[in-house]
Image (cartoon, rainbow, N blue to C red; front, side, top):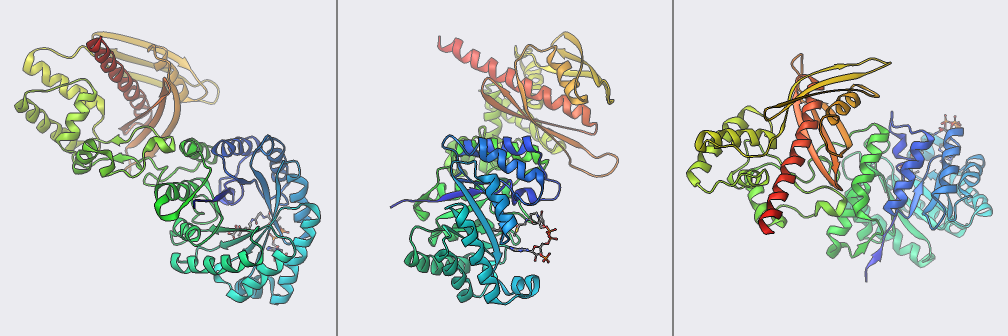
Length: 523
Ligand SMILES: CC(=O)SCCNC(=O)CCNC(=O)[C@H](O)C(C)(C)COP(=O)(O)OP(=O)(O)OC[C@H]1O[C@@H](n2cnc3c(N)ncnc32)[C@H](O)[C@@H]1OP(=O)(O)O
Ligand SMILES: CC(C)C(=O)C(=O)O
């Protein structure tokens, strides 16, 4: 029988412990609303006793997101009355509030941090649960540093706090010390004893990523009986972070045959949630990050691209649409082969039936690709267009926008931009002011182009060093409910920004023209 795995998201508590990731009240609320859309079972909204701001944020989340059938809302407390009171006073407004208490069980915590005996700490934990239980029915107890704790003492603690009324037992691998097989064994043994003691109590895990094993340990725990997983979006969290929600959820979904378990997560909301968290926390997702990284569904080598074009499951185990991502991306590079090249040509409206001409154009493409890191659709368009003029004296009827020149003035008061564009034989000039130089630049471009699109994401990074460093701008543009990716590279980051925007617009124009031609052909 399939088991439901409960998901607690702690992006707003453990995730927010990342240096520099501090969120304000409105930002916390926005993320909590998105987590509700994602359908997490529990939101750990903060650490209520830590500051008036966090207390207020947990309270507002409990009052708004925690109602109308929303998730369980919890916040963290030490085994200290005033912390427990603060959690209660802030989460009590939710329909389903939970108090979360943490107290260490390892010798490192007992001997070095608390300098107290096992008995003293155990009775402190029991007293904390009894106290919380007077306030709320639902109480979670986390045995901090469980994976480095003496097993019999760990169990003795769990047994005592369950008898005192804990309804969730969370087993953290606080410093990412566990290895999957050993952690699986630990969960298996605890689960066996716990279910014999009280089978209503949920067994939860909370894994950190210090040696890159957070997801593996979490999945191994599920395989061995854990009922609940604690995760964060994009794997954010103290130090190297926590188990990434998207990895655990998609791991379970993709290998349901192995785990025999499911979650209620609406996987199509994963990408939106990841982007929101990344933007609000100001923390980029690494490009090769599983599920949510920019390259998670990008394919650049010829053998892979050929396989994918024949059948997507040759090189893809997750459909990008399942996680709310746009189509898989075929990045054209010097490692691409003829199949991917032909596919890209067709996408931009060029059908070369003469194989000799195709081979000639492919050679020209490889020459260009060797000079550039990536070949974009507009590069290909010009290459193919010039080739067609040379060979047949005619060009395609599609006209793309080219950047002639630009002037952007950046200041605190009134950032402005003036841009000159060319399309075929026509030239255009537009000016605009904006909230910042890029906003002004994009408004100026939009003023000349009749296209209703929205900038969803703007990312800039440096891809080389020194004075001649290249700036790479990567955008996500939304047009008619579809997301288009576009990129550009230049030593001038303002110019790279303009080119990336125009590349996206040109890509939309090319696809639209092709769709129109298809419709006319079939009519
Ligand atoms: C593994 C984790 O992620 S645990 C959660 C980590 N999150 C946070 O720390 C949240 C942010 N923290 C804070 O805002 C503050 O540290 C507070 C409000 C919790 C405490 O602040 P302060 O009272 O100034 O204490 P400070 O942080 O300097 O030291 C922690 C104290 O709590 C004690 N303590 C630590 N863990 C626990 C616990 N689980 N239960 C009871 N006491 C604890 C420590 O022994 C120390 O006590 P001492 O002052 O008697 O030596
Ligand atoms: C509060 C607990 C669950 C924690 O964050 C940890 O042990 O890492």
